Length: 363
Ligand code: SAM
Image (cartoon, rainbow, N blue to C red; front, side, top):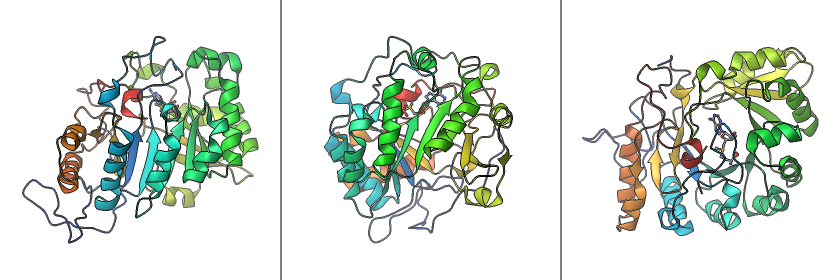
């Protein structure tokens, strides 16, 4: 396992009295932290709303798609909101990011956002999306209470987009980016995965486009999370390569203030010389940031996962459907997070790719 970087952001304790199972006891209002054995506290909940997607990105899933979850396996809207409410009210969750699969495919997404915005304390609400269909929905999502958005875009070239995603939808994604800005969502972040020999040469062009659009670009190292299990470390475009490639056209400045503010953010930020624009590089594989991780995941079928690479899950759906109380569910969730591993372990010789692909976990 790589060195743990940097120290976790520790929140003021809600309740830290140790119990026999290593979890903490609730305070008088029934609240407690999602603390793990390494001193990290999970406050950022990633909620997958569906495992389905309308793209077939080659690094994510095969051309024919995947065996999707059956309808009755998925949490209903009411079940999703109940679990998010337990997280927010009892367990210190402060940010809720909706993802998938493709979350815009979930019917009633606007109402889900509104229901989450009505929770108290009101969490920050974010969405990770491929942007298809966003052009007509960004304003309603912002109106419902969406605060931030990440849109995935790997190329500005129509043919490369078709090759990478197996769909001819570049124009829809670009329209979605414009609509997100027009709807006042801030910041608009763009997630980009570079693939060797396919879109890696486009890194500088993507950065110049992002600067012109006023959006923040973040390059993500490709991770071993594809359904086909075809990922090879030697093929991955590394954070250092991305930096070198960008540096051929712009100066990348490491800003001390950015480094201080990084906290649990996965992206290392660089200022583009001569501007106030920032570009992020997420070195999930070559410089993991597990030591500062404050994330916990809820899959579309109601399983708690501590990490994209976790090999175990805690089944909240069964508890929910067998009549468990909010406190019992919170208790189960606390115990699950207590077992979070120190790191994702991609570098361990014993590393095994998780059986669920990224699209089924919630990216
Ligand atoms: N459909 C939504 C989207 O496209 O943003 C949300 C889910 S998608 C799985 C979330 C992000 O994960 C996307 O930016 C996608 O490019 C990225 N992603 C998918 N597979 C990946 C992999 N193997 N390594 C790194 N990022 C990956």
